[in-house]
Amino acid sequence: MDGGVFYRLGNEPSTLDPHLTTDVASAVYAVEIFSGLMTINPDLAIVGDLAEGWDVSPDGTATTFRLRPGAKFHDGKPVTARDVKWSLERAADPATEAFNASVFLGDILGVDQKLAGAATTVSGVQVIDDRTLTITTDAPKAYFLSKMTYPVSFVLDQDNVQTGPAWILKPNGTGPFKLAEYSPGEVLRLTRFDGYHLGPAKLDEVEFLLSGGSSMLMYENDEIHVTDIDFSLLPGFSDQSNPLSADMQQAPPQFDVDYFGFNTTEPPFDDVKVRQAFNYAIDRQTLVTALLQDLVVPAAGILPPGFPGFNPNLEGYSYDPAKARQLISESKYRSGSDMPRITLTVPGSFGAPISPSIEALLAMWQEHLDVEIGVLQTEWAIFLEDLHQNRFQMYGGLGWVADYPDPENFLDVLFHSESNNNQAQYSNSQVDLLLERARVERDETARFDLYRQAEAIIVDDAAWVPLWHSNGGAILVKPQVRDYFLFPLIIAKYRYIYFVE
Image (cartoon, rainbow, N blue to C red; front, side, top):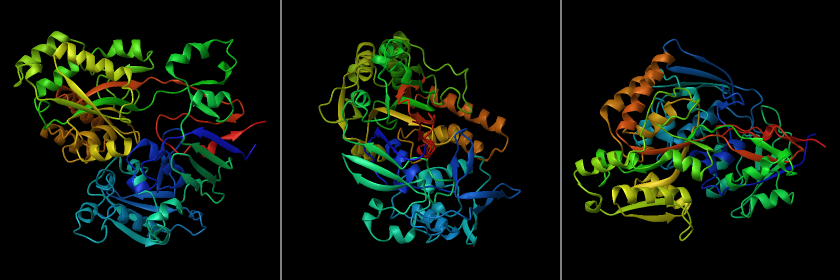
């Protein structure tokens, strides 16, 4: 049946402005309130959103988009090609400070000049008429349409934004839901937009409870409709005598990677042998089995299993403490005790307990490398800001979740020397060349081979300590809920949900 309110716990967003979105918590809301030219459907295909169709020029550089005639903002105003152009130029305006604009929009002609303050418009975005525009990239880019699914490319209402900074509390979006209420630390409530161009949602509202609390207890008390199951509780829910076992659903593996990062320009991580030693000194398999109940799989490289371009033959780092100690002795620091003080920064409230997996990693490094590592915890919003400013020596408690199904979204976005998202400040001219060749390679097999070559070098250079990829988990979903789809990417999903009696 249509209607009803879907309740769940939510995470506090660092921003509700899609052009400023850089984290998962914020993106979850952005994709429901706003939309762009393209989106990702439940089959993980790149499909039209505000665009009903598009044509690509023979040389692959110019894409002409045709907007859906029924596309409108939440206030009923039609979406025009000029709205798309203004939005892209707003994202590329240096005054907006959209961190991801260069990464996700930089292929468009004129974006770099706009970001540098050398142009007032983006030359590569041309309005043909109210429903038609052409976007020209600097070269044929096979992943260009995929990048148009990221929130920094979403369409905003100029009149709404120009009312002042408080616009974001009453955004005039184009997504399946309108923002009805946002009380930080308490609740974020979405209400259905009946005029949504892809068909209205079935639910009346979705309410994200931001105040925390025990998710499992709230589920048992019928306060929320869905909850994750902590891995320590899984055996109990697998027991058929447990009345909640019928509510359990298996979650698919996420397209993600958890990792620790180094600032490769700062001692002692400016020495590749030190970085390699940190990789050899940890027993990923034991951590995965003993602490994480095999709900994750050890990461050999960067790309997750099942992801386009994944290399099943990439070996990565084995657990070899002797090799780790040898590499430290061969480094310019000679021993762990002679290294500069190391500080690991992780997100979290000051004084909160460190996760068991991080504690285990620290113990392995101390035992095998004779290094002392101090831990600094910072609140999430501050952590993100410092991460973007490359202020960390070593950082952890992080994961990267794919924004779209293309290896460029991991390897180029995170490791090209000129990428804003290269927080490791990693630089290898051979990797840059391979990534740049992959950008313009139009044959998919050849393109993926270039990415595999680049990934192998990145892993050998130990730019990160890749830890693990999600292996799927389990959740509880109330029996009256239907079509609560579990995706490995962040996709607008609440419009599909409905209740049965």
